Length: 79
Image (cartoon, rainbow, N blue to C red; front, side):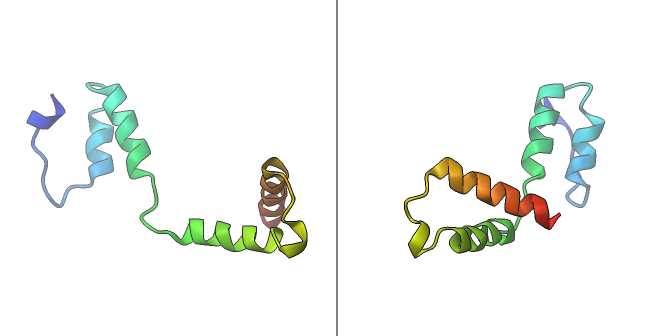
């Protein structure tokens, strides 16, 4: 159904899906989630940098959930 509809190349794709969410609610929701993904790796690079400071030579035996909790709290306190 959505494949048969006209789309202008310079049209905002998020707006296009927003206008069609009544006709295709599941597809519109999926499209909004996909297009919300940032087109940059800065967030993941920042996370790896932060985790590198948490997991040092002295802390290599920390469990995964402990590291996750430390990173969560660190991020929470930054905000």
